Image 1: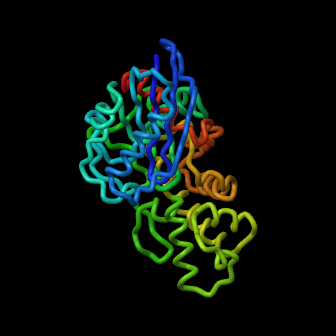
Image 2 (image 1 turned 90 degrees about the vertical axis):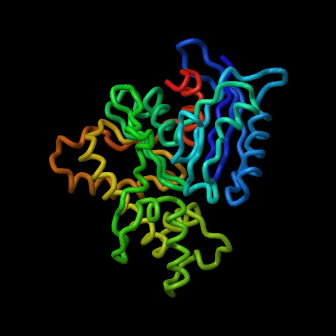
Length: 311
């Protein structure tokens, strides 16, 4: 089976040509990626996405199915994106139909966090665990939940959205979790502190501040950067202990670019969960795990989704 997999995010867009034998897992044959440039018009972004995807298809070949991981909220059945914090200005865009016309194959779309969950449950760090929660911490914070081998999406088809849990900012205001703990939130908070305080920081000499720069500074001991990461870790801890009490997961698998912070971020999370869990039986061995598929987790999930006809 020839599969075209697309991972369409607010920061990066990836495409891969995959093949799968009946009942087998997809194998990535060729992949490519590029910046999304989400600030541009939806038409420009979609045209560039299609060109990227066409570039990974071998000459003369055509896909039997297209799987696409996309930001939500959207209608996975119709392939229509309602709107998205990761895609400013997108409202009611029929992306699935556009891709169907472009490639002449069935299109199976799902939320990026959901497809990350499918991939990591099927062949990754959360293989066979139930329930298994997947969190992606990158431009925003998304997630997915597998229960007894099936993707849980709620009555609306829009669950799970951990980045939109409400936590309290250090200033006392209620905010969405991703406003503090996502890559975008980490960068925004750092820029705000640089503009409103005189705290010394190597970041003051950098022309562009993103979460990768903040992470590197924090790993180097920069106190301002460390304070931002500690704030992010605390907010993430509050959100995750809530998820532990709601779902009692056997594993929480975490992917996305912010995971490159490693133990600087996750040691405080593990400690917070240990300290605040209602009972030790809520905490299985090896609860928090890094995604096995790395940057390709949603791409592989999209291929799996397409191979199974949207499961």
